[in-house]
Length: 155
Image 1 (cartoon, rainbow, N blue to C red):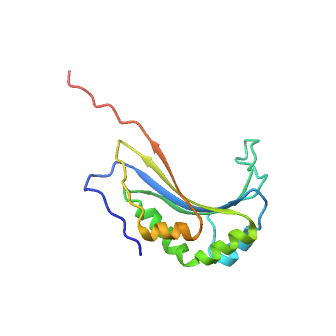
Image 2: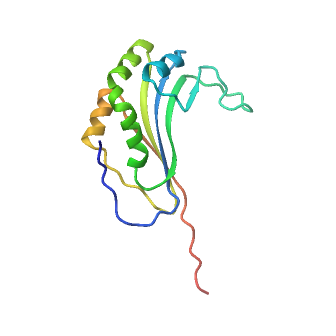
Image 3: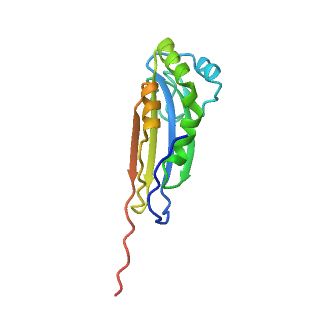
């Protein structure tokens, strides 16, 4: 089990986090093979050429199998990274075999939606780094910082 350091005791101001592990390839790979071999149901899939949204003409330019940890109101990244580690770390050999066989990449992403400056802090532990390295993945961190509310001044 990984251990992340928690940051101080500030109150939460609606900051939300989610994370996902994604297999993707420019060619059309069989999504059902990934699901069957891993024994894990994806939360989202799409194929090359699928529409991004029904009302938009944009098409996907790669195939994707994704497992997403649901968005949570939290300041602690382990709340969304730990479930991915727990589910996939014992499957590193299978992930590497799938990557090679199906010619695809694997990515892990952490998405932070920061409200009112309530910024999470996190540490990537040696165990998580080893997991990332063992599957040939990087950790992509996307941050969306929303503006502070202006405080009303006394007249």
